[in-house]
Amino acid sequence: MAVVKLVLAYDGTGFRGWARQPGRRTVQGVLEEALGRVLRRVPPLSVAGRTDAGVHARGQVVSFPAADGDDPDRILRAVNGMLSPEVVVRAATTMPVGFDARRSASAREYRYRIDLGPVPDPFTARFVWHRPGRLALGPMRGAAGHLIGTHDFASFCRAPEAGGTVRELREVAVSRSGDRVEVASRADAFCHQMVRSLVGTLVAVGEGRIEPDAIPGILAARDRAAAGPVAPPHGLTLERVAYGRRR
Amino acid sequence: MAVVKLVLAYDGTGFRGWARQPGRRTVQGVLEEALGRVLRRVPPLSVAGRTDAGVHARGQVVSFPAADGDDPDRILRAVNGMLSPEVVVRAATTMPVGFDARRSASAREYRYRIDLGPVPDPFTARFVWHRPGRLALGPMRGAAGHLIGTHDFASFCRAPEAGGTVRELREVAVSRSGDRVEVASRADAFCHQMVRSLVGTLVAVGEGRIEPDAIPGILAARDRAAAGPVAPPHGLTLERVAYGRRR
View 1: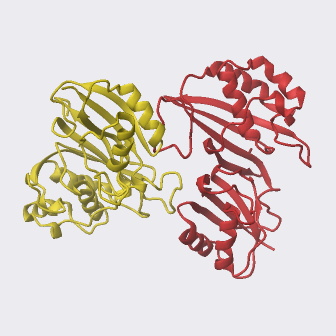
View 2: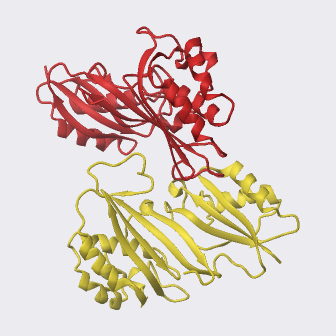
View 3: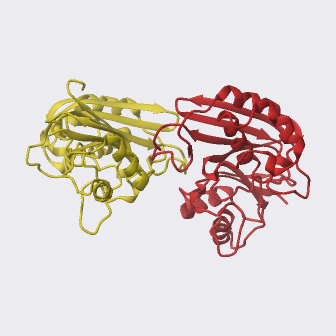
């Protein structure tokens, strides 16, 4: 049976994260409700990244088994008519049998945005962590170099996970433009709160509170308490999910 | 008596515009309330641009007479503590006697943002008019050329104004980057709804519904009905107010 693939963007501010929860407004919840009205059934959704409360997405991917008569263009228009601009279907396509938004994904790419300026910016405040003051980028990049690679990231995971906490972190790039610092990270997959924990630790390095060379020991500890604090959710956006050989 | 000058940025989405109105949430209303708590008096505010409901500002300027003990740094911190990030005091300074945010201003600069992409973008939707489809920029620039200069802009003003409707429009620049079109306009001052009326008319030109060479006749008509429609408020931002010889 063919599969419908949706690429979603959303402003996570008003949601308690991706995953459906009784009595709470979540992205999955409002999307299932909208799909239910369009398709006259609520399909089982597979999702590439289960974003936490307050986290945003520009390139989230979901999929569900297609039924006769499912028209991707119509789904896009109808769902956007109900949910946009808070949640937007950027693309809807039919994929071959076997495609699954979560299992088929080869990489996830997140970007964390920090504003170092003296006062917040009303135009970006929903999507950027305002943290006034200096950050030393050289040490942050040194620490990032220690994080890249295949490691047990238990120290950066909220809790032990069924599939373990070994991940292949392929990129952690720290860039700066004016008062804006961005941390782009890409991995095969991330455990729960891993990006925010990596960013919080890098910020602690940029503040001089953790030495870059302490990172290997933090990884080896496999202990949540060894890492820095967890950065707030609203600075984080799931930018892209890669499929196939594209990493 | 010296004068306190504040430079403000705000997200206009949640406000019924700048000007205080009984029973309505306005930028002036919340700012006066915050200043009242900080200064223990509500000072009379002069403002450079009386923005409409839904219009934003990055460089709005207000001023009020200083009293003994008014400390600009303290005002900035205290007001931001109450209103940020929806309304942010970007700078607070003491100015010489005679400075007035409205009367001393030599130019106002607005920017109108349009997104031509097929679906809205949740990250910019509050500040950008999503108007999918094509716009012909060449004719829009031709029309802009006819608008620049000192004219009676009665056809682009919501209503006759006490001081008349002659303005010096110094710049109307239409630029494009990807799906984003921006119209930057600068004048000594703008009458009520003038920027949105100019942009609505330029969009009608870009759609082929008004010829660029019809602009001189629209100006000469001095009749609101001669111009194109008024563009929606949320795409508009007051970017900067200039003082002194800087235009």
